[in-house]
Image 1: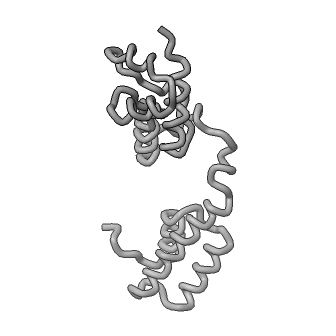
Image 2 (image 1 turned 30 degrees about the vertical axis):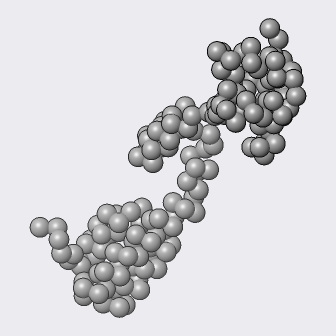
Length: 158
């Protein structure tokens, strides 16, 4: 029993109804009613069988994003960033400017706190601010050590 034409007609009907292309392979025909489907010659007959539920369109099979979502969650935690995943040099992944901005903002924040607390008077603050701007300090710890070397006591190191 050949139902190739019926399948084709059903696919075209479904395509019009869904508003997107429904292929021949997405048409499902109830195995118990194949005789009835094979006797359906006109599109009107096929439409009736579709309304009865003898012929249906299978759902579209998509690619599951479950694994991708799981990987994204892991990446958000900082995983999956080993040597094999990297493209680009260390400096392209975090440019020099970004690194500088991160360090200088941190140093300026600490200097501002020292000024507000009263550890540094405005002229000292200006002096260390300029030194920081000139790149004299590698980190906050380095800057604190230099300030302490100059005889200024910084609280919180008990």
